[in-house]
Image 1 (spheres, rainbow, N blue to C red):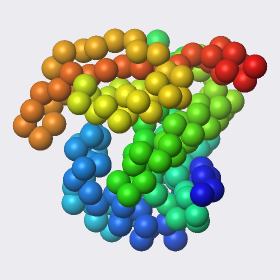
Image 2 (image 1 turned 135 degrees about the vertical axis):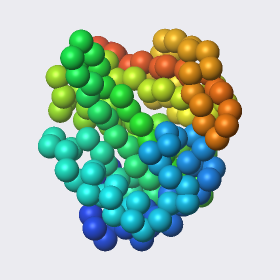
Image 3 (image 1 turned 180 degrees about the vertical axis):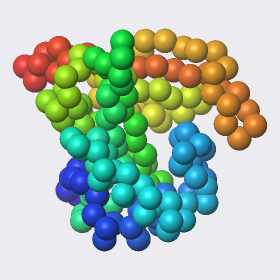
Image 4 (image 1 turned 60 degrees about the vertical axis):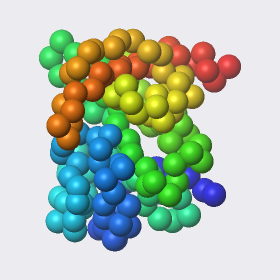
Length: 173
């Protein structure tokens, strides 16, 4: 199985929509990620992904098929030395160790591309798989915010995990 992170292409639309149209994925993401996920959503997302210079969003590709997305988004103002990472992967590929590898690759890209010192991720307290991904990728738990996520009529606690630039060099030795 070959993992590649690359820019989106128009030809990725079919597999993007096929895998993104899944309630089990959308329930763990922001409301910007719709369910059902339709062709128009995929077209808009690919256009958005390609609009950023430098690139912020990449396709997660396994065996030449897009199976998910990963992005690093630099913040502004007093938070400009931080960026947020987000990701999702097709349910068929859960638990196969793909996302921690993709996250590690995107960490390198993020620190090389943007003038940042920290990359962080936010997840809900019930998304244990994402918490495991972050820990495997070397993220450190930073904070728990009680009841800050409201999704599908329920409140969830938000967990924040962080990764500092200096951790990259110490992990490579």
